[in-house]
Length: 444
Image (cartoon, rainbow, N blue to C red; front, side):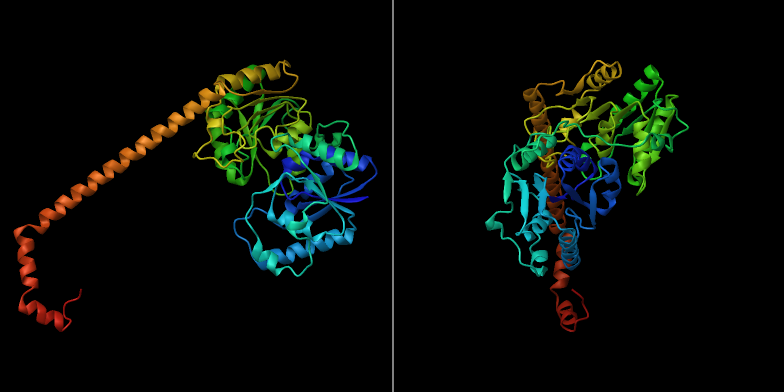
């Protein structure tokens, strides 16, 4: 069967779907994957048998041109039709309006997805009106094969259930794998660093969700510990927008007499990034695409996680350590009511360094999750106290502003009752003033 999988999301999501792709291909199905153009380059490393279909659609763009989006949607549907898809699969729990518009066009083929999933993006009614096509109405049901899953279950488990209930297929190994040749590994841009003599870190890597960044002081402390105990240099990776942040960390480490490097990735440099990670001893940083690359390349992973999606996107690594602080608001989808996320801010450095030491010593099997130095209720109480203090500070500021306003009103009243002000009022009401006013020589 020709199966088209709609994957208009990011690198990490695509890596986590590797077992899904692999199982379908091994079962004899032809699999095409619809991805945004800038994510095409990862597909050969996931599975060279995947048939790419690229699009410039941006499901979560802040500003859109409705006419251009409608034309691009029509082009994408035409490409899927031309390939001859017999089934279209939408493996996203949190789908977008664009995902729904694409799937709804294929009323004549099998449509598979998570029936319990939700659309949390904005409505695209204006785009829908521009589309001159006959499509499935939402009242008819978006999927002909709907799979009910728990929102907070890991994504790899969702995919396993989808295959099992739809086709009766079982995923043999649910751990994603990326494949790069030994020659490719040897061609690393950072070949001046001996293999396994350095660690890779992506401490920011939070272009889509700024909350997810690893705290600066934790990134510095981990790099220091790795150099002091293991002699490992850290290569900090990121995009151009993150250069200043990464160079600040490197400069701080230089102040301690510890070397560090900064590698800024450009478009079409996934091969170089994979090389860099594959030759490293360890990955540490935030919940990012490179974190999933490291896990899929059998590199030990240390990551700081927040509660936005709880355990859904944990790295499926051979060995790893995750630090977070569990709170009652876990599963918020990163709709945080604070300027920074307490689930990350409350992570204690001592816990992270302890996990790092055990990870390096080979004392962790699988992925260990440390849910925080505080109990869930204690941490939530700390958040509540912070909110209470901020509310009290806000009220005090309002009281100060009100006091300032009363002082200004008192001063204004003093001016109004002064002899000079009263005399000015008398002049204004004089005959001469009225004449000049009538002749419009006085501007109001």
